[in-house]
Amino acid sequence: MNDADSRSRARLVLPPGIAPEVFLASMPDVVADFIRTACDLVPEDLEAGDPRITAALDGLGEGVAVVVEHGEIVWMNNQLADHSPELLRLFSDAAAEAIQGFMAHPDVVNGESTRLDFAHGDRYYSVLCSPMPDDASRRTVAALISDVTDLKRTELLVEEIDHAGGDLLDLDPDTINPLDVTARLRLIEDKVIRTIRGSIGFEHFEVRLVDRRSGQLELVMGTGMEPLSIGERIFAKNTENGISGMVATSGEAYLCSDVRNDPLYVTGIPDARSSLTVPLKLRDRVVGVLNIESNRIGAFDERDQMIVELYGRYVAMAINILDMLVVERYTTNHNFSSTVLGEMNQPLESITRNAAELRAGYVGDGPMAEKLDAIIASVESVRSRVLACTAGPQTILGAGDTEDAIDDPVLKGRNVLVADDEATIREAITRILEQRGATVEAHEDGSGAIDSMEAGKTRFDLVISDVRMPDRNGYEVFRAAKKLDQPLPVILMTGFGYDPHHSIVRSSQEGLEAFLFKPFQVTQLIEEIHKSFASASDEGG
Image (cartoon, rainbow, N blue to C red; front, side):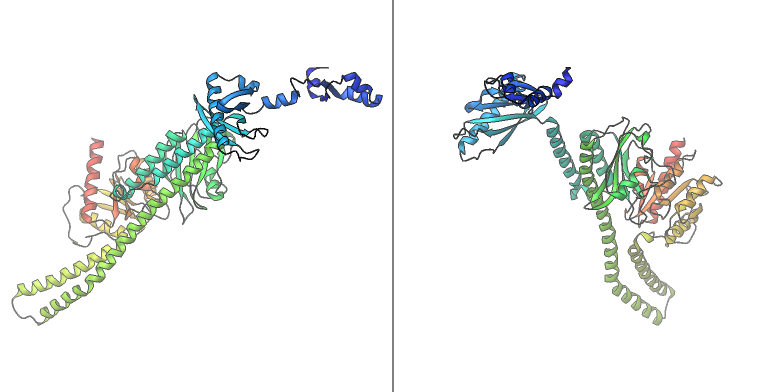
């Protein structure tokens, strides 16, 4: 009989004092022969007891023992005996503490237990103690020790992530209010990068948010990931939009152990081998995805997934708070402008009416008539300026102050490309720049601007683009400009800092010259244009 056959046979433990042959002789021959064939007869060893009990005890945790008052170990199994004296001392101290608790509460029922934890070196242990049922004084316990290092490390990491998430949401008004939307998002991004690299332990990631109108997954922040080609887009759809599209649709995380064997994977980092993509959720609504990649096969496990999903909820909440702050600023400015106009309307009308009456009945020298005309014109100018502020992002302040040509050596002879889906803005910028001697090519969308740059028929000196357009956004216009051989400066614009695709943040990281928050003054526009030309000249020189 080989060892495998021996281990697979049943073991029949005989009653005390009964020899195997005596036991078999008492049975019919057929039964006795069957038992000999199928079983190993084991005489009971009164000192060692049932070997199955010993095997079971040696398989419990890191060891089991019977401990009495003051932590004295009166019996331990072989597995516990193999540990170091220092570990045994910590184990007995924990058991002694448990005994003190049981002695203070002798009414503890049989089977009840208490747990105590301790660390030894870089490992964590848990001791589970239960009072022995035959000791009414509760001075004796059965104690089981288990290595809980992996569980403890996960608990500590969850606490660390929870703390980092709290820090992410700690948007102190004194710190956040003076910052524009770009600086606010950069503050959040720095914290996210620090946590994903330091606490979670991965280098390359990206955050994409779902555009509610189009369903497009727009890149918001990230590090080390390859951007999509110009014109390439990812949508929150189950098919043909990679892992991120599927996760954004299903709301379920996706762990890809080997990207080379997964048809859903879309290129992220150049040497990617595995990825982890989790949904960013606000309650049950998916607002985006967080994608992490590694150049190692099987770099992520279920614990990583749990941790990243937890942190992803904090990221979603932080970005949502920033968006609400921007909308609040937009709404506040609009309401304030409307209130000011309403309060000023009656006095302005009174001034205009009185001046008009004086002008109509005035007979005398010309200078006085001119002054009255000037008063009426000034009142109308005040009204139009307040209306311009009320119009918000749909206007440029001071755009109608003059129709005369303006000598501007910096702009004279320059070719400028303008892209904005708001006709009033597009036309105002065109008029302002043409007054200063520039040649302007204007487009109502990003696609037209990109096509014009790529066609190369005109060598542009400057690109001015809105960030929120129905097809190609400001970031894509910026990237198209940067792909050209010439150093082409770009200025991006957005209403009250509202940048749903976060084009300004991404472009700023890649060398954006300037950005303007609508409504802006004509003087601000010209100042930023001059700065951009000076910067481009320095780079070219």
